[in-house]
Length: 257
Image (spheres, rainbow, N blue to C red):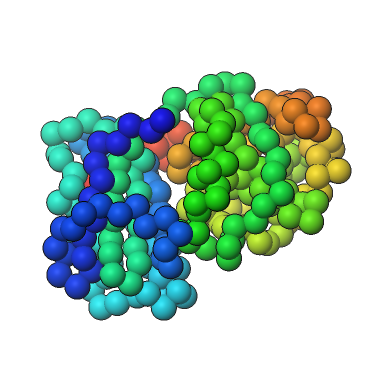
């Protein structure tokens, strides 16, 4: 069970603090960022805020000074003298901003993907319609397992991350019907072409590596998928992506608010 350092909610109209609401299944958008170190750093902070605001505009939830108020809520809840290694979640609806900080889990090296037949509501966005996924996640050990979300016999994303697939030295991702997270966009920009392809469940045996990427997990290599008797054949691309990611972590600028 996650250990929370902070849970707070604020009214959008005046930023007055109210009783905490996690806002799951509300009409709204959220983003999760990795906050770490002392002095404080937030990986891909600018990009996370940009993605959040863009989605809020599409959902017609954007309001005057919203970005400024989101940043203010973050700033007043962070302490310069604290050393962090947490996941910072910001959720926004038409009335509330909620912020929470939970410890970043330590992931095990042998990581398993469990396939389920489920698609998120409007999966192209990081919306708050997440309660069913949270219910699924509550039944597994999330430091060593994740859920692969499948629709029409295609693997699209995990419950927490984007997924990349490696075959014959080439990198693939699903075509659509998934959320392109900040970490995904970072790798798209850094390494160039990621081939878009329908990732059929029946064809997974063709892939040498399956890699999760996201704010919570960073870069993690899937060891096996028990239902399909699939096992990792290589870690070459995982090591390559990890080096690029770790360089971004090292070069991450200090958060000034």
